[in-house]
Image (cartoon, rainbow, N blue to C red; front, side, top):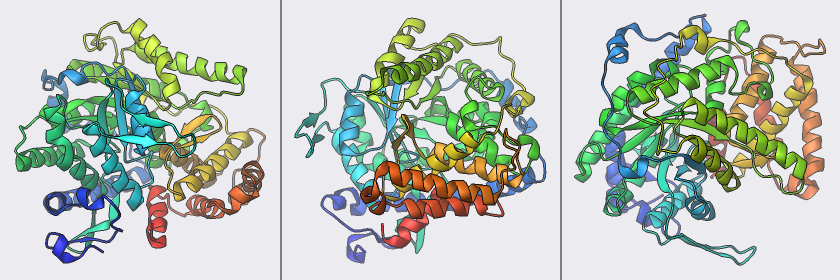
Length: 537
């Protein structure tokens, strides 16, 4: 623990202080984030309590709708504030963790934007978090370099790099290693606060600004809280209001009913909305977990062409363009398959179809998970979107109602789908427990969102006694048997040494506890984080 003499009153840092950490965790920086926690922590807790109350209503059978009390906002002719120059063209955005090599490669890869991810692509160990802040500070000042010990290659920034955006953790996650008045602070306020404190003025001096992606929100009230945080932070550092720009991921089913309201709540700080497709599917399962009519088929069958997903995507485009702001498309999770030309071409064909749909519908940009996909996505958006964006396409032909957003996708539940969920869930959790939050599995880049879908589907199928295509019932004995078999497959695949040196039994036990729970566990990352903290990570 950092001694009281080195920290502001009431602030305790319980994480180890390694080389360079004191620069990030300076007295003034800690005082800044402590102020944010004290000013906004109670409202954050109140809003999380409202989430729990609404979940109880959904468990009782209620379904969401567009709020009647905010009709005037939806019907109004307002628009968001004008965007800065470096956020006008966002056609290709790459996302990923914030390790040193990834930061350099992502900024250099030819994408327009790099979203540095403290959330779904990062395990929030203490060292991961503080090292990431060091990397971002160095990247902003263009002094970041990396020498790969494996191949001896030297990495440095190109003269021209992507615009940097940062995604802090969601409102629901705590930071156990910084205590404010004896209690863990908000992970979101820590991630945002440290990055903003150290880099906002430097970014502005270099012609850019402090730009963010905001995850996991469920309402306009949660967006207003972020807006209040932005106003207070800018005021405290003497930065003009509206300098911060934030894109909100619409990755919960509830946020889909408040898109206008979320843009309005962020007022001059808004830079658009994004289709967070994987978390959106997970949110649908989670919110309606107790409804047997909302049981989903295999996740591989739930693509963006499913009616409820296509409806939400089109509504997002229409909403954003009406407000003169960007509507960003979703993630292409495929990664190049270098040793199988046929499989690689099939994977890239899926990417092309997905990106052509997005560009054709009117999205102003898209996400990729791997630098190798940047040229494919760029060619499509360059061809179909010759201007910087498509905001002029208002999509007034689109008409989406509540029934469209709530339509349950059709399909089958198969043993292969059950096995895939269990295998991927364990494989991802194993890497997460080792400190790696973004993992290539079976030629897809998996993050916490797909692991959430995997375990949520299994829980839902067990809860409602879903039938496999061959007539068998999905129950806990079947899931336990398949889990044991998939664990043995993973052991054979990775080899005994890697298996013994990894966290596979721990991951399997955690996955099993999630699908055996009597009530649906809201987040897999919360118990996983608690496990890491207990282990001293």
